[in-house]
Amino acid sequence: MFVIREIPIKKGENVLINIVSLGHSGEGVGRYQDFTVFIPYALPGEQVKAKIHEVKKTYARGRLISVIKPSPERIEPVCSLYHRCGGCQLQHMSYEAQLIAKRQQVVDAVTRIGKITDAVIKPTIGAENPWYYRNKMQFPVGMVNQEIAIGCYEQGTHAIVDTEHCYIQHDSNNVIAQQVRVTLTELNISTYDEKTGQGVVRHVLGRVGTASGEVMVVLVTATDSLPHKQEVISRLRNQIPGLVSIIQNVNPKNTNVIMGNRTITLWGKDTITDALGAFQFHISARSFFQVNTLQAKVLYDQAVVYAGLTGQETVIDAYCGTGTITLFLAQKAKNVFGIEIVEPAIEDANRNAARNGVKNAEFIVGDAVQVMPDLYEKGLRPEVIVVDPPRAGCERVVLETFVNMHPERIVYVSCNPASLARDLAILAEYGYKTVEIQPVDMFPQTFHVECCVWLKRKHSP
Image 1 (cartoon, one colour):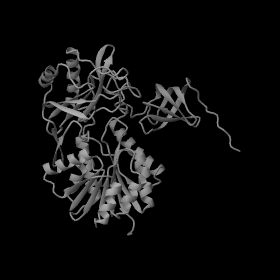
Image 2: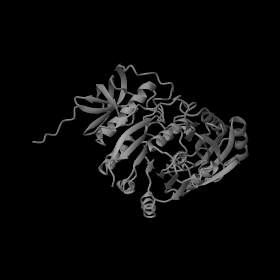
Image 3: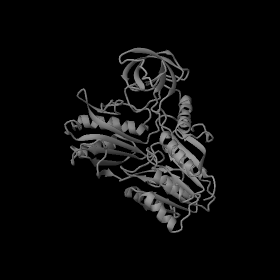
């Protein structure tokens, strides 16, 4: 006889919880009378006191009140805004412990979701400096207590946490936020109110070339005109070292999407430059470029290693974006074909290849599910397929398309262990064994982890 279990916990109740692991969003996961409770800012091995604020049928959520028994890995966050701001989730955890926890996140997903127990999952490759790594900033702009605020949203809300200094942003991005705040205030330029749809400036973006030192400022406005435009340009030029580009992006829509379709160069260049390994990239206001330049090179180098290239292979790079991984692969392959459904990204990819003198990479606009069978019918036989999909991973039909081309190896780059594990299980059904997984910490102080995976075909078709 099936018995409905009584939930042993109530909303508003204060309870002692033993934390056993970290959740996929970096929160502590504990058990109370064998009932799961999620507690942000709690660490494995700790006993904490928490106030329950949400109760569901299978779990509850609580707010940390105090730590009764602290973990030896608990440290004091460097940022005074840490417990309000939604930008970081793991500043209260030592960096060494963060790396271990991120590997465990991958292990848990691959074994529980993917049912894969025999793959080698290597220690997470950490950043040389886990601070000040973000080359791209995109902060909302608004009014808080009748003053202009620029910063991240408070966790789970659209309330802006005014941020004077972000410890994971490049220093130049912090300067941009400070100077834009001062400029808007002194020139009395209004900020956008998403509730009323009134006001001018809605976001400020900063982009920094880590190798070049070049800096771009992007002001996203709800209006076509920018009040005091020339004075804004003059002030920013005088106050921001390395500034080579000031851009206005117009987004009049009532939407959570940050950027609109119109981009205007107010002063300077249309792009900044940066380097990844041996390659130079021109980055526009709307270009995709990995936000952690140094760790991106680590990740792409690993993809090349797992591809096992000797110079004789044909490689397909599905979801190639602006062609960054494609160019890395082209250094060691005979030919590389990059496929991407977003046409502007392919335009950027072609420009990147031309600027770097890469002649053995071809970029194709289209859906990989349609493009790859067509290439196969034309006689293309890739030895290696590389895929770096969106966070949701690949649809089964996409994985089937890969398998139908019979590559000897598949290299899967992922930013989401859960969708990765699901896709590895599907590929296992089709005869591809997960050999090795290398986690890479692209986003220190957050719960995110990137992975590079080597799969090999078990037998010939």
